[in-house]
Length: 258
Ligand code: DGL
Image (cartoon, rainbow, N blue to C red; front, side, top):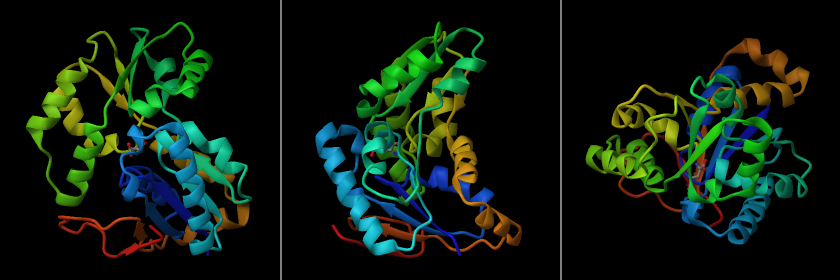
């Protein structure tokens, strides 16, 4: 049975996992969150890269055999995908903010990217904009508070509406954009709340579907043939730090190699 490992700093990757699981319900999934280092969006590039290489080793040693690793984190993917790929033979799929689809859909020729500071400050994003949003005005917005709020929603089942509204207001998102790219996998968890707080005619767009399609491209044919079985298996969750104050949304969380 095929084994797909999903990796993120926290629970953001579950927004990607949901799309992949829909495409491949019968795969075995391991989900590793590096919550000891959460939020990745505030880490220095060098620190993050070292940490990711270390976790890649953990994944390889603890979870083998593995058919595919999905780095379900924009911050990690935009900074380190090439580096990670150069250190393993296991295929790796990463997440790229949906700048390209947003740029092709916009009518106002103005879009926004909402991501972590590490992502918005990254040269990779500048290149992505140059390559796929030529002639489009791209406004960049950075937030880590939304990462914390998404974690809180997932683990506690509640959203601090006041804090969320305040954060969205402080971002001062231009009224002229018609698409806002959610360039952090934590943010789709809060998409309805963000949309409501924005109180404007805007579409939020993320990469969940595109990643599931990419996984379909990358997996070997014999694995895809098993798709018809449609037996959904429980996801095994692993974390690098204990989860505090949870109302338990996932059944088993094993602590792994801090
Ligand atoms: N979910 C991650 C992302 O897509 C990172 C959030 C964080 O740890 O800052 O960027």
